[in-house]
Length: 70
Image 1 (cartoon, rainbow, N blue to C red):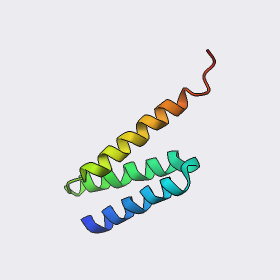
Image 2: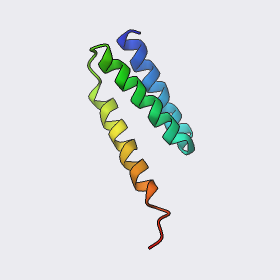
Image 3: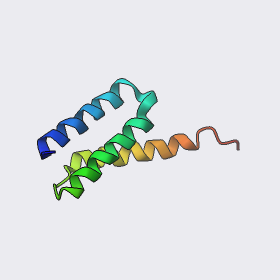
């Protein structure tokens, strides 16, 4: 898959995260797969995509502790 196709697929996943934040964890995994695929093909992963994945991972980690009893 060419770089532009992978980037377009990743951007579509980002749009899905914005539309349906309830499925963020599923979409985050799909984004991770796209990033991994780019790296496997030796393509440079766009910094904005990496920052967004990092942000989603941080939000997911923060959400994990929202329901913890104190």
